[in-house]
Image: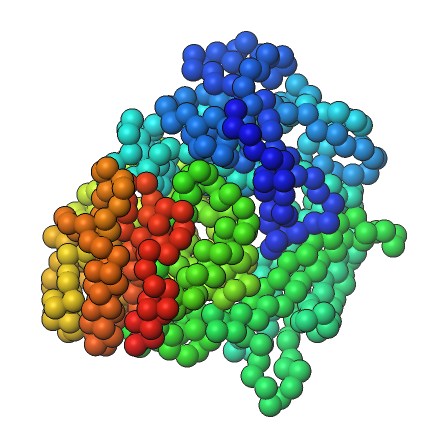
Length: 584
């Protein structure tokens, strides 16, 4: 096993937008076993098993940081560890998983507590009736196959990764932790902001057995701006606050990439003067809207300069080696003059969104794709997408949801009414749960009219052709993107904002024996910078575009087309990229 120090393992609080004070990290060294025959459950491994391997959670077994580094497919996985608690009456113990790919079953002290389907969404179990004072046993069984009926994202289903697909991530790959609350506790929070009327609507849901005092406070830089308390029965409790400017001369404290100002939020459940649960969160007063074919941030036109980020690390695969990794990535994105990222085919760790909120970067959050169209794929994607929306809808950085990408999983959407209906369903489902954000229904091509953007992927267009091809929006709609029609049959452009949401992608010369990019020939780092400058200057002359997203931030395995290498170190001059981006 690889020697990994305990202080290397992720120990920061996993979800800062829903933070409790009383918690225990369960990351670290766990017992581990492959169960290639799939007989472990039948043989009652959750009761007793002689584990011979160890794994470092939260890294998947395929990664070097896990201590295993086996990239072969093992569909049945078992994890086990013990943890100590002081059990007290009148307390709840919530076991939380950031993400586990794909089908998870959990036992506490040999008692089955529940299961979860989905490789990208977070989930929890109330294990209060199963835990005991002192040492407790936690066993997790995970099943992750090569099926394309559930959302995979960039995880390749074959033996060896190829083109723009990568090594599979199986089992636990985000944080595992335990939270302790009182007799009642919050299990959801949604914050909706209205900058036009300076209103904040706060929706909570809490679990308990009788009425309690529910309170809410909003603070800015430590100063209480608004507070309210009400006695409620268990279930939904809502608050509505009007936030006043502290100084009528100064601009209101809006959130934007240039000024990422955040308000703090605290919700509390009390009974008889005793606090049973307190959750700390935050929010940004910001608005994303569309008007006359333009994207507006806080009611002002805002040009999006994005870079694609796939969130892979050499030794951790989909799991960042540290919280600092997120911070450094986003810091360098800002230093290069981008104002946002498109997180491509991955639902990232909540710490990533936290740092984007704090540093000030726009984020497009994208559902990982399944790769077949079936009733099972529709159900699996829809169920998990709802969970993802509920987890991340309070982040001010997230301004757009991407439900489908390049017709992946809906290969016949150009002509299939059934697949078009699926795309429309995802659009309206997303808008019904979160009407405050933009939705891109099938990013890239073969789009339906039920979308807020006309997003185009084009790796073939060069600087010389770009202005001619995209300079006239009416003519543009009759052209193709890499041989694909922009709209599916029966659908047309309804004057949505047009964004070139994938372009570039040239591979640089590397040591990788099968280096791949969106151009046939590999180029030097200097040639990459020269090409980038020409592309950005050409885009700056195309007034029909409301933004761009360049491919991509880092090299990932065989895909060597990043501005940073696979170790997340710059291959090009950060200052020069910033200078080129400043022309727009």
